[in-house]
Length: 475
Image (cartoon, rainbow, N blue to C red):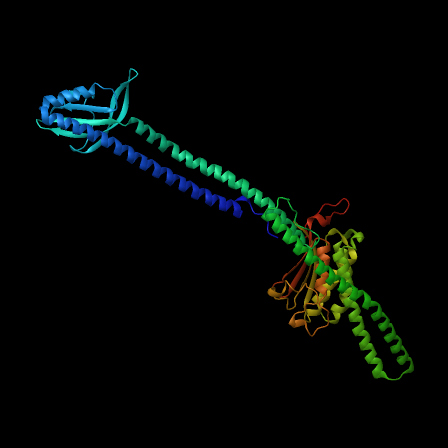
C-alpha cells in the first residue's frame, strides 16, 4: 500500500497554490494598472495647469513685452502654492520667480520635464520634485513654469515600496491558507485511505468514518460504506455457500470412501473380479482427492475467520522446516529431486504450528511436483532486518510474472499444470496462512531458473529464544 502523501503532494494544496499565484499576479497587474492610470491622470492635470499658466504669461508678454512678463512672474511668485516660476537671462542669472537658483534640468525648450529643487519647509531646506515646461524668450531669456508634484512622487515611492510586500504577504497568507486547507482535506482522505488499506488487508467489516458535516466527503463516505456493505454481504454469502458445501459433502464422501474400502476388501478376500477391485481403488483415490479439496476449503475458511488463533505460540521455523523435509524426503528421492534444509540458526516467531507446517508442506509439494529429475529444492528460514523469511526455492519452470498475482486465488490453475494432479487450492491456502499471521506470500524468480516462494513474516512476529539475541542468518 502506498504511503501517505506529504502536504506538498496533495491536490488541494496544489490547487490553492496555483490560485494564490494567479491571484497575486492579478493583484499585481491590477495595482500596477491603477498606479499607471492614476499617475497618467495626475500628470495630465498638472500639464493642464502648466499650460494655463503659460497661456496667461504669454498674454502678458505679447501685450506688455519683457517688463510685463517680469512683473507677472514676480506677482505670481508672491502667492505660496504649487506653482513654480523662474526667469533667467542667457547666463542663467536670476531675473524673477520663486525658484533660485536655476535647477538642474535637461531638455529642449517646449518639452515637459521633471527635476528636483530645494524649498524651505518649516525652516529647513527640503528636496522636492517638480514637473514643468521650459520656454525660450526672445532676447536670450528662458522661462521655466512648473508645478510641485512632490506629493505625487511620495505616493509613487510608497506604492513601489508597498507593492512587493503586498505580493509577498499574499503569497505567504495564501500558502498558509492552502496548507491548512490541504491538511484538512488530507486528514479526511487519510481516513478513507486508512480504511481502504484495512479492507484490502482482509477486514471487510471496516467502514469509512463520518464527520457528520454533510459535506461531499460525508456523501462519498456514505456511498463507499453502502458499497462495502453490499460487498461484505456478497462475500459472506459466497463463503458460507462454499464452506457449507465443503462441510456438508465431506461426511458423505468419507462414508462413500469407507464403503469403497469395504467393497475392495471383500473382493480381495474372495479373490474375484480383480478389474473391479482396481476400479474401486481408483475411485478411492479420486474420493481422497475430493476430501482433500474440501478439507483445504474448510481450513482456508477457518484461517480467514481466525478461529485457529487460539493455537498461536512461539515456534522455531527451523524445526517446522526439518519436519516437512523429513516428511517429503521419500517423495523427493522417488522423483530424484535434491531436497535440503539450509537453515542452521533458530528463527522463532509467534504462530500456529499446524497452519505454518501445512503451508510449508504445500510449497514443498508444489516445488517437488514441478521440479524435473536431478533438480534441487532448497528450504531456508532466515532472520532479516524486516522480520523472518521462510522460503522454498526450486529449479523448475517457475511461474510467469504476469500470472503470479492470480495463482493464489482459489481453484486457479495455469495451463502448464492442467494435466497434473491438484485442485488449485495449494497456494490459496498458503496465502490464507500468510494473511492469518500478518505475513506476505512473495513469489519471485530463483535465478538462474525456477521459482522462489517466500513467506515473509513481519518483525512484530519475531520472538527470541530465552537468553539468546536475535541474529541474521548468513545467506
